[in-house]
Image 1 (tube, rainbow, N blue to C red):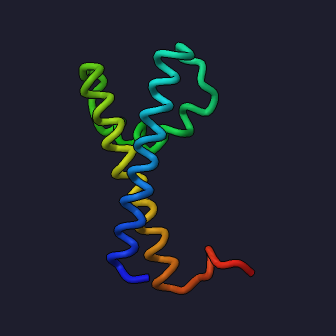
Image 2: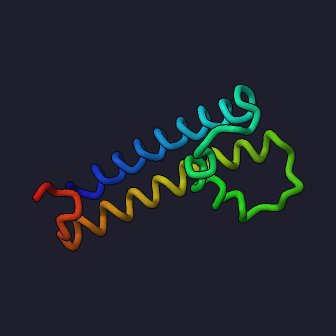
Image 3: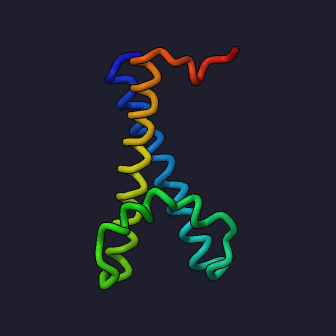
Length: 96
């Protein structure tokens, strides 16, 4: 797997994580009114990104930053994990 394929894979996982975070947010905020189990685990990458900013932002800006952070953190984590696994040939993801 070359670097281009790793980038494609990481962008796909970033998009999937962003979509899941958006669905979880809507379910948590509008449907279950804050009672979704595992919500903090699902949006953890986005919340890590939000910690870099002040709490005095508007709701819409925070939501957009949450989704951007979810995408960036997940894509970077996926890229680094797969790149390191391929570079050092650690066989982390192969069946034994």
